[in-house]
Length: 121
Image 1: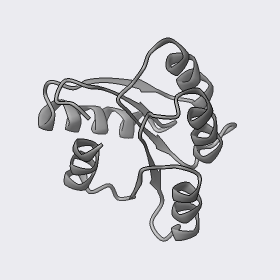
Image 2: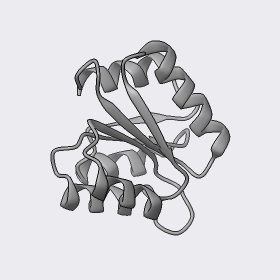
Image 3: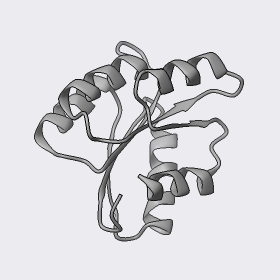
Image 4: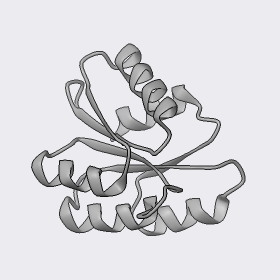
């Protein structure tokens, strides 16, 4: 991802959305961060905007992160997608990687790892 990229963060937890957004603003100040509280809303944004990366929680009500990943791969196949998994959910992380995710981050989120992973993509 370029130093001046755009990132979309998708999670139904508004506190986590705010925390991750603030983390990226502090550690990657040239990156524009947008947030979405649901997969359907994220897909609307993805249809309108080409993001440099998407970060999404796997477990969300309705359309989950794995379904969102599948739709992103069809809509924007070149957009790197990082998925967030709960602690100990290794099977979901493997599914995410097999489904085309570029990386995954476990909760509690290591912010340095997240920033480093985004910088690599």
